[in-house]
Image 1 (spheres, one colour):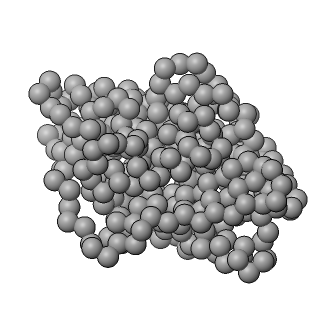
Image 2: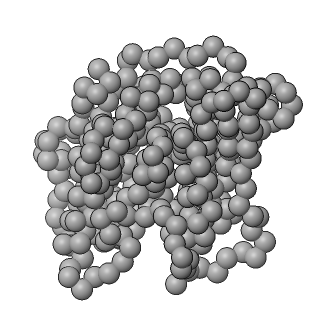
Length: 325
């Protein structure tokens, strides 16, 4: 059942600015997960700069959402009732607080062309960006704006890009269904459970990037978020500032497998960080029943989460690609 909510939560809030000239409609979101606040700090800094006249929106529309999930933010944790960045869609029968967020947020996303979603992560590591699929006409995530996403990726100020999210997640859900058994039920067994803000944005005809700005408490993470927002504004010509140069030293990785935690006592073999290198056969962890989990091939570990709940993502595996080569 949904948790009891504070009665004094603030209303959902977005702040919009429109330039005099036509241009793209950009939305920047933060605190989709309540303990990921670097984007909130960067947005607050930008609002002050715009309102003071230091920064001027010259074209298009800029919408800022400093706190997307106010319940999770108030509680200082990843989620209120559930992870907002899974199975994101409007619903006529909201049960959990995140359903109410979705009913407000999804139409707002659909009213824009571009989304920059600002996040952070639990383990130590370097910032990186999550990018959508190549252009395709498939059924899972059809897309036609890969070139636009790739151009912005090169200008955010980070040097690592990761793709393959939704396809990898859908395959992981299929394995989760097998592990859970035929009688199991739950939203996390839906093949489209991996749909979050960026995937929803793409489903509405827009394009989107998730920027992982660093570890949750890294004091440098708000600066990463700030630089990315400023570079995005300049790249999209919403401000009259020089366009940022394109980075040509991008590392590109593609997710190919997600491994769930099966039991609370599943344990990693060490304190993994995102993008630590793996060789075939390396011991990643041990299940509660003694089963040893090994790397199937050479690659990288991504999003290792020692605190994951059972039947949730424990870690991802990725391998290099030539997408940004």
